[in-house]
Image 1 (cartoon, helix red, strand yellow):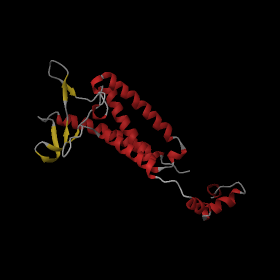
Image 2 (cartoon, one colour):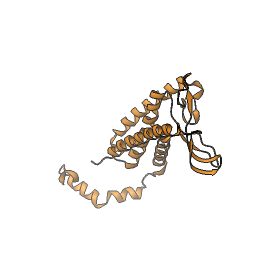
Image 3 (cartoon, helix red, strand yellow):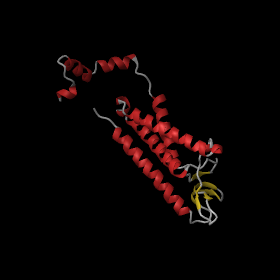
Image 4 (cartoon, rainbow, N blue to C red):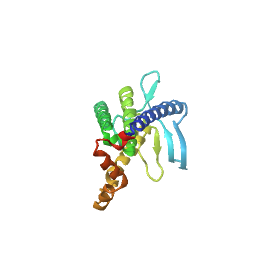
Length: 208
């Protein structure tokens, strides 16, 4: 029976690698630029879409470390700092475990778009979980400020949002089959073949 688990794992690993590679490369690169910003799209002198990093001093010698978000999206819970960071890390672990369990379900594994959504969510979850454990917070560097000012985010956040939107589309986009569609499926040639071979205990796949 065909499943799409490989799609889930491939997206999770690719998303995790992309998230960590961009965080390390952007923070390393922009550390050498005076204002720690590089515009990707600049509508006005102060607005557009930019790579933007922030740093925090860690010692009297002038050394610094990447500034991190210890809360969740939009800085939710950031005021509690360490407690919030480890609380969200625990939630990330539970979410990753739930996705792994869900992926073992035959129904989910046979649905391509569910596997795509779960792969993206797992990538984002693992990417930010790594940051919370290693840096005591999440490294953000993407800043959209044209027409509206969006909180600084990262590739893992993007994976999480895209995966969640796909799941919502799956949940609300499917309509239950009508009685006419069910009757049509029951009288289709494939259904007739399955019914005939089932009399001798052989499924079409086994017979082939």
